[in-house]
Amino acid sequence: MISINPYLNFMGNTEEAMKFYQSIFGVEFATFQRFNESPGFERMPKQDQEKIMHASLPMGKHNNLMATDTLESMGQTLTAGNNFYICVNTESEAETDKLFNGLTAGGKIEMPLNKTFWGAYCGMCRDKFGIQWMINFDLKQPIK
Image (cartoon, rainbow, N blue to C red; front, side, top):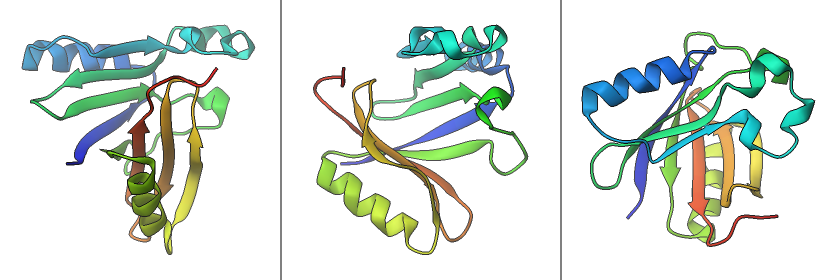
């Protein structure tokens, strides 16, 4: 079974927003990772290193509310309409490929499917209707 998770983008206030959601829903963070915990963070501007790379709050048995800080230093901008992704967690790399390829038909690849350092096979795209998707399969081992 796949799960669909909202992935929200914020302009520097992800921590504040997610702690607010945490207080509302009364759950503990599954993940709360800052950019300074990722490889190569030293090359980032100091003001961005403490911002949130990934935060995840469990929402029921199979779903999470997830979020990140949008960083202008990485060429990202936040405008109404691009401040969220629908994140689909799959059960295999093959399912990931199938969904990603289907969603990118007539759309735009934003991040090609790739095995990531955080242990996922993941890609991001915007479909032909302008909806943003993050397709993700959790690998057994992080890539080093």
